[in-house]
Amino acid sequence: MLLKRLFSPAKKVDILRKLDYMGFMKNHLGLILISLFFFAACGGPSSPPEPELSTEERLALPANIVNGERLFRTCAVCHDKAKEGAHRVGPKMWGVYGQAAAVHKDFSYSAAMRRSDVIWDDASLDAYIRAPREIVPGTRMAFDGEPDPANRRDIVAFLKTLQD
Ligand code: HEC
Image 1 (spheres, rainbow, N blue to C red):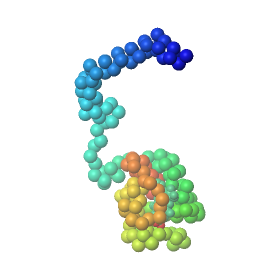
Image 2 (image 1 turned 90 degrees about the horizontal axis):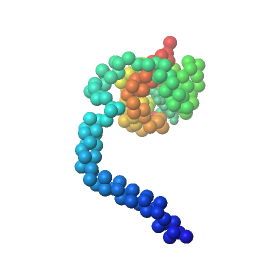
Image 3 (image 1 turned 60 degrees about the vertical axis):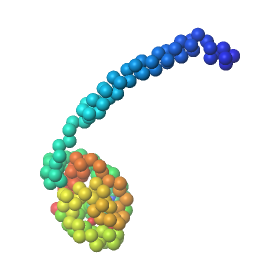
Image 4 (image 1 turned 120 degrees about the vertical axis):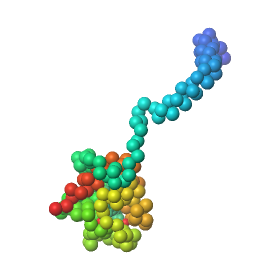
């Protein structure tokens, strides 16, 4: 029964087709590799060249506060944004921008955060949101980091609005 099915004419045609396809790949492998190389060399159609910007230039680009507030939802698991908000796993974010790290005296920060001499401005917030432990080694903030510079710029612009 199984043998019959294996050697049925339909199966044979199928196998022949596969062999034919492999023959094509073999004959044209060079061509395929060359086109792949050019495709890779051009970076593909969807990745325009990234301009090389300094941190200052990058942070000075216009930010989208509305998008920043939307992105803040991932932070809001741990951080309240309201002026009269409460601390959660992390301290509330009201009044943090422009201040020295560990500004809320009623929140128990890590020793690393209390001892850091970071002032929260555009550049330090950008760095902290990108990789918290790089700028405050030993911080308790369990956040992997936001890799997209435009997203970080938007989040920082939103944090800037959380003050009187
Ligand atoms: C899993 C919880 C968690 C998430 C998610 C999280 N944080 Fe935090 N965050 C903390 C904790 C805890 C601290 C206190 C860290 C310490 O004391 O070392 C902190 C500290 C901070 C501080 C320093 C505050 C101060 O008073 O000095 C900033 C700024 C901050 N977080 C911003 C953010 C932003 C922006 C996001 C989202 C992109 C985010 N955090 C996501 C838990 C979190």
